[in-house]
Image (cartoon, rainbow, N blue to C red; front, side, top):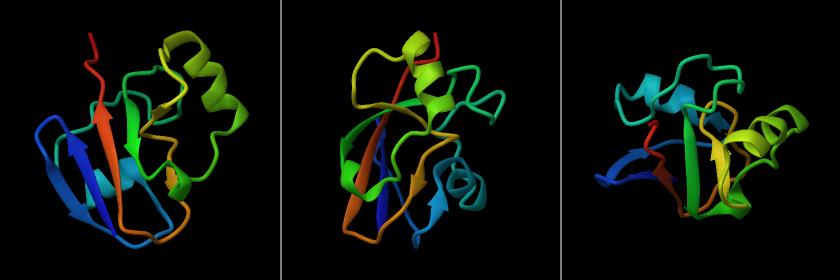
Length: 98
């Protein structure tokens, strides 16, 4: 399946299951800022524009962080998102870390 990162339109191809932050590491694409990789800092926020049904639901610790840093119900933490199912594509808009 394809994962597309906006802005910029970077596309990587991956098989589920996979964690988004690991996908960016494995494909050596520097599109997702992160600091802690544990879901605490909120630096890796993304907005799911397409393909939310292919992602595993957010766990309670991710939801706690999003309660502080998220702005929309479509916001997720890139370090916590798991692709759970195969599909066509997922489109993620990377939030400005500022």
